[in-house]
Length: 133
Image (tube, rainbow, N blue to C red; front, top):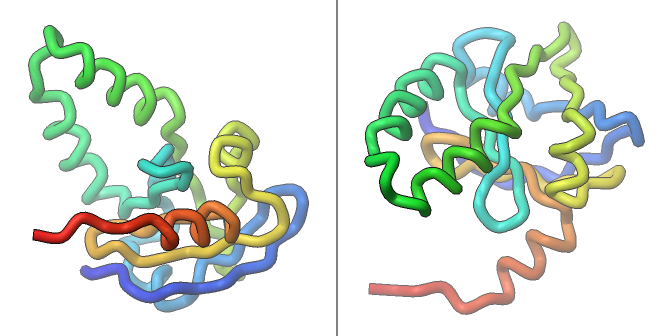
């Protein structure tokens, strides 16, 4: 499964979004994981893939402060979300606020997951120079 593409989405003030059909078809059911991503966005994962990834996140040493901070950020905000029959889901208020989402969103595929950005944050991210090897 490879999440790809960029989608402009309008949604209600209640945080109900339509997940594009192409992305829904890649999920192994109607439940997926949503949590804080890196760069003021949200990260969405297939439930089964997330549960494998979570085990990997728990492997780093607890003695590393950066690992603990990353865990706190990711796991405290994590939500299991259900997609309804029309392909919609509701983003919890804490995640809406974190990503500065308000009636419009940009959903992008990032290979092993998808991200949800506010249009303004996505535009700013794309202005920044990217590192190249």
